[in-house]
Length: 318
Image 1 (cartoon, rainbow, N blue to C red):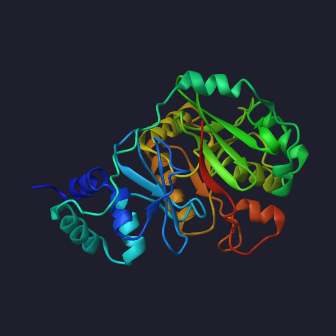
Image 2 (cartoon, rainbow, N blue to C red):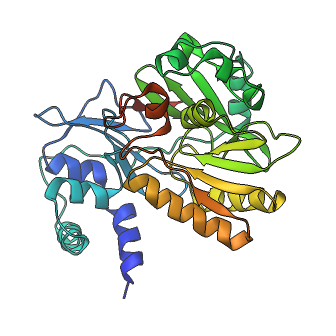
């Protein structure tokens, strides 16, 4: 008999999320779908992008209009639509798997996972130079002297149309990159998420971990802390990235680790997770949340204390 966790894992792999969405009124947009993703919409205009996570084999989805709040697995999709408990989700998906294949529904084969290629990532990044100015950064309230400050020299590249590119490194070197630009956020579809890091100062007193490269720049501009290394995993992080963070903290045992996350429930969860990692290696830790409820560090430098802006659409970037 499957354990509860094993059953959830099975649902994520075995329930065809595109087919399930089609049963709930979504239809494939053939013009925007690719061999790696299904782009789907319903009559109300709700939008899903469905694909396969190559690392886990799980079906996954996100809403490109609000990728930070509407994304996840089949479990999240059912909870979002039905507003039910995890127990009710189990019942719905058990019943779905017992039913025969629906008639009148377009076939949705498993999309091909995007092939990862470290060499393609390295070749692509050779096209770009370190950022010295950016219209996108300016629109987010980030000053030119922040972009060109010593901690960030050579660590941020200037993309097309003012975009900012934040390369990620792992034990083997460059492995992927995050792109922030007008209207979207993306991570290289051929790359691996790991860590973006600033330059390591000669004297290191603190390691500041942020939710994104933009937040790291904003924190620097707001706090201007000396002798600091800035780190971002580009959102939530995997077990592999947890290992990378632990190695980083072990390398600098005397440095205080600071969690500079958003002042919201998501930021609190990330802070607790990071605190647990840090305690495991024996370093000191503290949270440094923005002083305003619901704010992130970019809100702080712009004196924008409403809800954090969600103006970036998640896209794949080769």
